[in-house]
Image 1: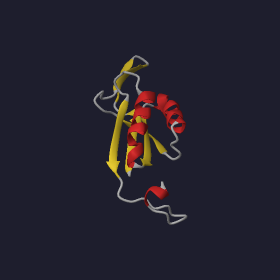
Image 2: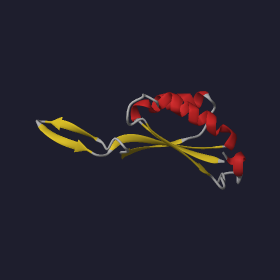
Image 3: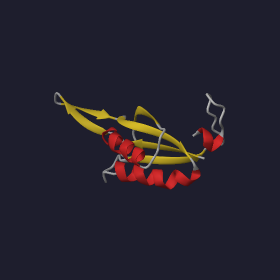
Image 4: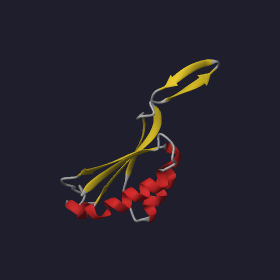
Length: 112
């Protein structure tokens, strides 16, 4: 099993969610976060003063899936989230040792 974490722009969240639903992903979590990567934030002008905005709004999505579904899910996220501009985000894929559904006691892929 794998955990896919995607950090994306808030403006593309609905597109990504629809793309994942369309391919059959039936469970995910998301958080509204703030952060920056290589772009390092940006500057804004407010009432004639320049202000540096270091932490930009982002959305962090988490999906736990079987090993076989990883490529399809990652491809769907990339296709829906890519704008071609700096700040499109990142995807992290990591191993999940165990999953346990609290309500039923199911383990592993059955618990996803």
